[in-house]
Length: 175
Image (cartoon, rainbow, N blue to C red):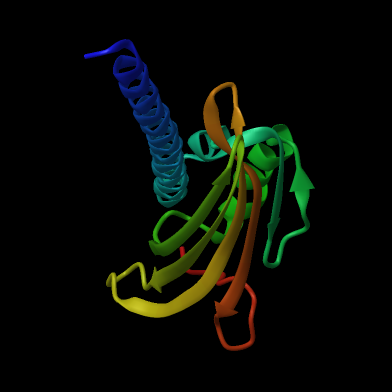
């Protein structure tokens, strides 16, 4: 091959390499988002499993240091210590870990070190003497997440009930 043919072929190969590098960069970004979404799902499931097990310390560990919790029938609270106190002193009054939760249909978007998630939650309360289902509650988690020390944490947790008990309010006297 002559010099000008080699130079033309080299330019062609350089263009191909640049195109492949762009494809690799795009795929790396997509893989990172997929890994982030999966880690956020694991975080949400860890939170819900701890909620069902009334393991308030694990529940609190899912939250960022400056997190906000704003859920139906409770005053909003900010900060991990306040959230941990809320689990142990407030939520424990109406949630005894004897419910059945099904959290489905996650819609998660990731933007760098922040993310948003929306989840549909069904909570089944049962009669403790027989284990029979008494009623179901439906609501949505509207979540913000933040990467804190290389791990995803809950930055904002909002929960709103869409279908609940007649007359509203949390169940009492079940346990």
